[in-house]
Amino acid sequence: MKLFKTSKGILLQKEKEVFRLQEEWDHIINRQKLFEYLGSLAKKSERIDDTSFDMLINTQLAAPIGRQELWAAGVTYIRSRDARKEESKSAGGADFYDKVYEAERPELFFKSLAHRVAAHNSEVYIRKDSSWNVPEPELTLFINSTGDIQGYTVGNDMSSRSIEGENPLYLPQAKVYERSAALGPCLFVPPHPIFPETLISIIIRRQGRVMFDDSIRLSRMKRSLTDLAAYLFRECEFNHGCFLMTGTGMVPSNDFTLQLKDEIDITIEGIGTLRNTVAMNPIHKTS
Image 1 (cartoon, helix red, strand yellow):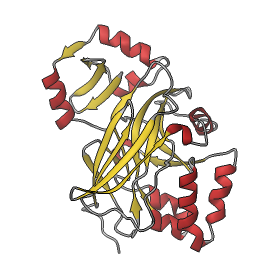
Image 2 (cartoon, rainbow, N blue to C red; image 1 turned 180 degrees about the horizontal axis):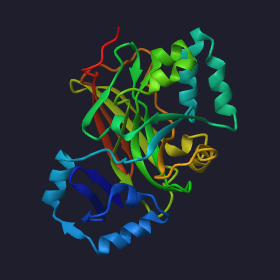
Image 3 (spheres, rainbow, N blue to C red; image 1 turned 90 degrees about the vertical axis):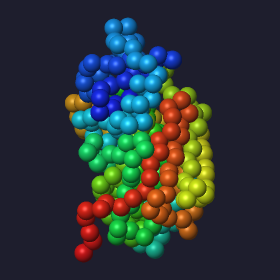
């Protein structure tokens, strides 16, 4: 089943039927056995037609996040480790990424609150003070307040490689800024954990031309999803649950950087496609 958050309410897609739910987002998703609960809601909810569903998805769709925090994991695929080593070697930080890739403890960092998260078909930002910017396509977990994975969505962890590469201590500035994350198009709630061979893919287009095209299986991730969730919950409490990006295995070559108006399509089998257009924050200026 899929949950869509819109400005006109919550929609539940169950097979070929779509229902409008009356409860609030945070109340719906933060529970045990979410799949079973959504099935019970469908039985007592109003069904809507395909035309209304398409209209709401195309014009009113919001990112599938409420009062949850969004966190992220890093260096969970070997390709990400190699990319981080390459970008940071001039700063003397390359060994950090080898060590965290092999360590028991994962890299985890805070990414965003809901007001900085872009939705499907909306803009993500690159920093004005960065010369090297890339998207990072990531399976994103929804974990309830007791630490159990209940659903999945598509995530885009926008990153400034030039800032992080200058010094690993600049990671928060490289990762956390306005519209530096996107989630969507829905929250996917299956009856069982996501299939390990699920394919994650990305296409970046510039004026219709494909600039980058890659894919990877979830099974290539070094760490398990449950381990990542367990480390995040070791000393943190999330009263409304939280979202966790799980790292990327696809990184463009070092001569690539995003440009304004580039289109980023990230697709995860079973969940859907998250599409965003690259822009810059029109308000803030660098000194």
